[in-house]
Image (tube, rainbow, N blue to C red; front, side, top):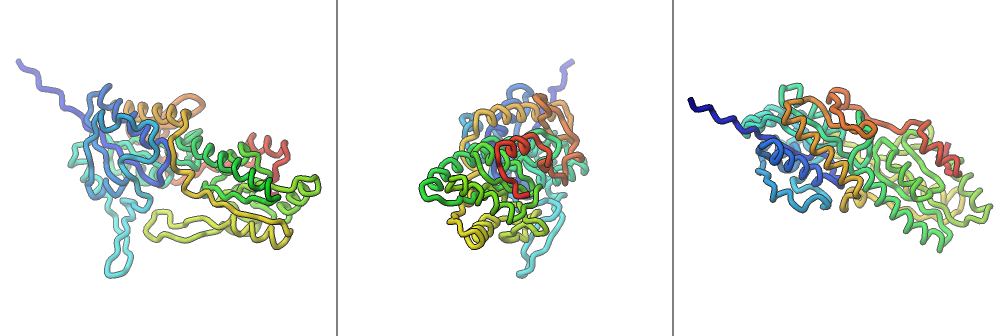
Length: 367
C-alpha cells in the first residue's frame, strides 16, 4: 500500500516597526533554518503589517538570503504606520480607522501558513499578541535599537546603535575641545534611556539625561560651571529624546495620526542648548543623531544574536510552539508568552549598575 506524501509546511515571516541593524541577519537565519533543517517553504510579507493585510508576499529561497548577513535595513521592507487592528484610511479628506485583522488572517490562510514569524518592537508585538489570540500561529522576535522591549535582556540592533552613537560622540568631542564649547547630543530611545545611558558612558559624556530621571536645569548648569572652574573648557551632554525636566513633559516634535504610536519625540536637545547659552553664557552646539542610529552594517555581536534568534524562531515554528517571543535571558534563549510582552516597556532602573558606575566617575544625571 502506497503511503501518502507528508504535506510540506509553509512558514511566513515579516518585519514591522522602525528599521534596525540586524533585520536581514534574522531573516537569513529563519529562512535558512526553515528550508534546510525542517524542509519548510518560506513566504515573506512586504513592508510589515501592510503587506500582511494587503497580501503582498514573496517566496524566499536560500539564494534570496545569501550575502545579507552584514547588510543593514531589511530586504522585506517595513512600516511603523500600519496596524491591522487600527488601519488608517483617508475617506473624503477624513481619516478613519478600521479593523483589518480579518484580512491579515486571510493572507495567512491563502498561503497555507503553518506559522508566522513577526520581527519587531513593542508596538509590533502588541499586534502580534492580538493575532495570536485570533488563533494564528505566531512567533515573535525582539527588535529595537531602544532595547526597551519587555521579556528579554537585550534586543538585536542595540549594540550597533550604541557603537554608532559613541563613535559620533568621539568626533564631536574633538570639535568641542577645539572651540571650548558644550556639545549637546540628542539620541533616540523614545521613553527609555538605554541608548543614551550606554552610548553616553562609552563616549565619556559629562552629563547624561534619561527619561527615567527627570532633570533639574540648575543642576546641569552647576555641573558645567564646575567643569569650567577646573579648567575643563568643554563638555559633552548626551540627552535621550524622551528626557524631561522635573515637573515638565517630554518634547514632542510632531504627531503622526496614521501611526499606532502617533507621538514623535524630538527637540529636547535644542531646548537645552538654548537654555545653557542664555542662562550660563556657555557657547553651545546641538547635534541630533536621528536616523543614522538605525542604519549601517550590524556589529559582530548583533550578527551572532540575530542568527541565534532566527534559528530559535524557526525551531519553535517547526515544533508548533506558538504564542511566544524569542527572548535572551542571560546567555540562554527562551520563549516568553506574548501576553507578557505586549504593551509593556522595559525602562532603565534608577539603581542600575551602569548608572552607579557613571556617577562614580563624575557623570551628572541632572538630579
